[in-house]
Image (cartoon, rainbow, N blue to C red; front, side):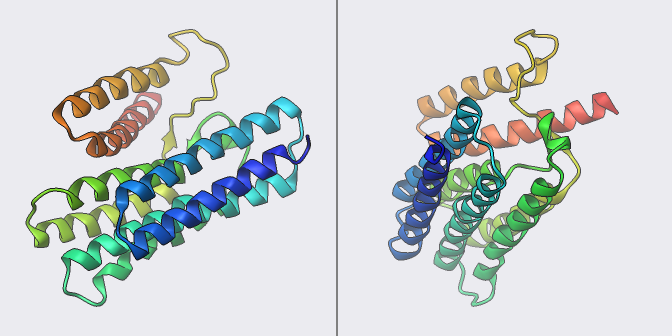
Length: 231
């Protein structure tokens, strides 16, 4: 029973590897996205089972971070690299994508040495959130008509923004509820409600991949608002 959380974490790592290979070899972003979403599900489950079984360990913490670097750092970088390579004639520009895995590693390293603050909120954008944004962004723009130059510029700009957000001191909303009161969890409930509404609208409009990215944008905006209100 004690090994269950680590087994789930290893599944997270496996799904991240499959997502990376799929996006690099075939450019099948929809298929690769499924594996990153499965990795996110495993990332949630390993922590849940560790709490339920009361088997938290230093090994589990380190293994979780190593798996996350692949699934939510390297895999999204592969998405962006392949996407930029397909719409840009530059040899150098696609490699900007790998800034995401570098800053994901920095984010996770800081998380491991600052777990006290991360118990009540996330300090900086969590790497799974960044990964979800990129799978939605790349999948959407890969399947529609666009001006290549403007999308290349937008993608590079967003890479820099998300790298900054991951290592920033911005207090991001956490879903670690102490109770179920609306007043104490206003921003968390607001995020859930607004996200559901936006995603349903995107489903109706047939742009569901973009809906995933919009949810992450909403998450960032609400977190910024909460920071301003708290300050």
